[in-house]
Image (tube, rainbow, N blue to C red):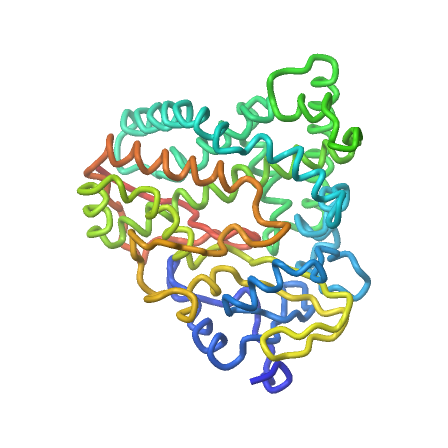
Length: 406
């Protein structure tokens, strides 16, 4: 079915039955309407992609840009400031071409396998400390608040040379930047201004007294062509890494544990065979039906996707979570297979804009799982699966809390 035949635009994000369940429409859309019309929270329309091949094609095609401030691009949310997809933070960094590649190269040096291996013992030690604190405070406990949130914040703050004692402020600023429907425009703008001022002050202090951290190195370093990062780019980089470095991983830790504990045979299988930790993390990333809003892209020329001709000026929404459940890409896509390999999921995107922090996210998820299996083998949910509640009104998808006992 082509896009023009799908008469009724669906309201997006799509509704779902349970906190861990995929929307019922995914299977139908992949089958019958791979390029579907959807209405965004702003009221504007976009084209939704749910098939693996189409999502991968668009995310890898440089003609589909992140130029979401184009006059005819769909607005994501009611907030004129556009949240994380269309903020000063997004526009201060080179979004494509050689400039984007140079910027990425300067950052990715901090996310190599060698650096991740060096970080791993510290991450595990911090996870142990947080779990000990949680156990001391008694059960039931909220695993997201006790471990899922503070661990990635501590790690990214350490990398940026930022005090993690400010983490509650970062959390509010991040949420406001990731806003869909939770905050007013005035709240979003005020939070963004505070965040920019905070990061600008932090960078000014690092200029005076550089440390052994990523931002200090970016301030003093030059790219391959001898250029230095502008202050605006430094501020945007710091903000971007802080938001991406804690919000998504904090949510993923809670979702991964929820997936493993809602069907206790999965947890038991891991206890019996710890060598499955790495493939389990990858499968949790693929199986996650709650990745969030998806990746919006804007097309400045006519392009064909999934047998449908998209006109110039179309905003396309790539639903990576729906693509990760595509039976044509994964055998038994609707089942969670802890030993699945290979597992070419799209949880981190694809192409030039794939998540540059993915080595860190993988390291954190594997470390958390290893430590929990060792320290709390009797871990279980303290509520029924039906009682788990989703994060609402933000671009990221997750659980608002994860009540557990042991």
